[in-house]
Image (cartoon, rainbow, N blue to C red):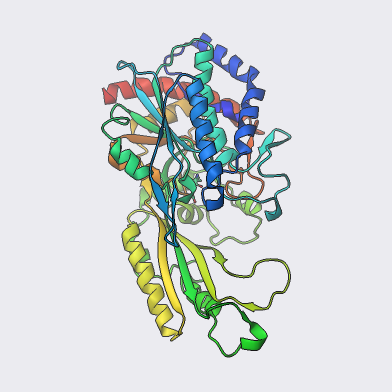
Length: 499
Ligand SMILES: CC(C)C[C@H](N)C(=O)NCC(=O)O
């Protein structure tokens, strides 16, 4: 069973009878290689949204996505969401957002599937074992940038609709797609588009499904929360050009020294955020949450192996999960302008820009965090009495998202997992960010369920990202049935509650 297939699963299925399940499953299994080839075509496109030099590739990716949906007979639009302003003041066209619709029957529920087809940067020399843009199948693992995050899951949903069409089966729900190309950099332009189309495209949507996350372990999972993210640039500028450190070192106050000095004041070695006001905003961990976390399957040794470290920040499961999902953290990602090539260049860089981010949790507010971080860094910098100039910019301000795991969507999900796996799913949160999740919820007032498709060891954003055709436990195979059951149950529950 391969991944792109997965969704077929998810789909539709609500009203399908047993023989239809079998037919769908057979169709999907017998088309597995075509799904892998479709994924190969998509992986080959370097749709890196963070690199402005790759923008043409991103536009091509959106066109290709729209074309695939058009060829399936969907009502497809490429929605212009305007321009992006770059830190240097230049502007650049944003990739268009693809919307599509299959079915328009007012007697059916309408499901909106959201996904993205942009990716994080990847280079062979980062330590990939294979070319990140050439899908490589090793023992059933499909390696390539974007395989798990989020190209295979998006394709899987599309192929699910296609399987119904190919078998001349009626879709049990109307299906809408919203597929974007800027998720990895904060979903620029998408908030405004959702607001603008609230009373049109989104007016008949009953609920939203996102498959842009992963299981936590080999136990089935449903995701009910994601962290937000505030991403900052801190630029320190000094001399008018780079200087020879032997000739000028000791006479000028170096921008890099200033920058490292202020970065070191963001977080303590034991992980305490030192920016005033941040920790105070965080909702305290309730007893109920503590109990929920205790029951979740999470193997600390496995987490150590996966990350390749021999010591973690915390030694117990609840603390680790809580710090992964529902406490903020500061991560320092890189320094632009710093010398980073092999060799021993002896330069004093004239201007350096640090990139760091702070994951957001309830009840933090990105606007407030922007002010707290900017004020704090300027006050720390002022104490250094440096003649250099500091500029702090927040380039992403994505809010956290939290659903009610008691909502009928999750009841349906749990019942389906039980039916299929004979076990309760773990109800998990996600430490990463899906910037648009909160907007969907706030603007459309519709509920969201996140149904992870990725494996716990897919390596999203990392070297050797992959999506598995099979898992040792065969979870993808099971997931198909989970989905079938889910939607069957889903409609039963939701028809009662939503209609
Ligand atoms: C695991 C995340 C929710 C996946 C998502 N596509 C993502 O990577 N978002 C950006 C981020 O930095 O979290």
